[in-house]
Length: 303
Image: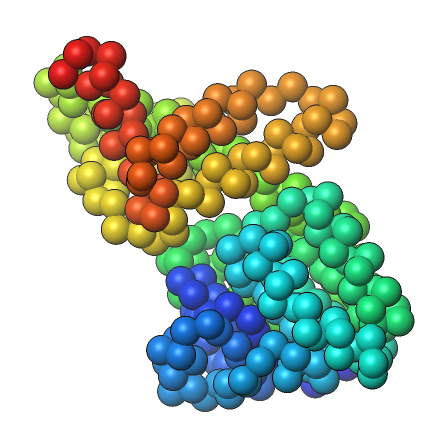
């Protein structure tokens, strides 16, 4: 990618993708976007972005970012793009940047498919993010990249327009593994805070007061700071659907099995978030894990 050509395609203008693309526009990038729903495209155009009718219309962009729920969605969206590249090769140095939370192993396989379809001219980089919608809007995301050092440096101006903490963790797949580790901590910490809230409230304690004192001690964390208020207030309007945590923790199990690592917390988390899905809570905010635990408590107590 020409470092001086600030042009990108963006696929997926949802809760996270829309503000990320908006920050690229603010940083002076020319951004062409595709999204399944037209309302998101209209909002994107009002900010100065350009819409395309199909993902394959981005085939000449030097960098194409995907921000869709999982790799299967990305593969479906990119199918026509790869077919077009099989007929006419993209320019050498083209980047396909996967910023979704995906399987580390599967994104490496996707990278191989992109390389074959493009005749080696396009490279996949995985660069998932953490920081939620607040970080996406404020441009303060943590971005975890899997790429060669050269490719990472080429993409650093792009990443820096969307995040304040940007790190290369290793080759393709490393970013996704880092995000899986991130989700292990976020998912299990949120669950532990939810358990503590339910235990405290059922014992007659004020949850806000509990969280206030916890925040001043060793239990204080960014998760407590950001998710704690929603847990305490039982506010479950989605800032990010809880169902994705089950998927992300499954990637921890997959990666652990590959290297023979024991991950008992991730295993427990997968079970808990599977229960959340069974209770029909998957489209609500991650904090709804408190309701999942409350429901389990009611069953245990016979209520």
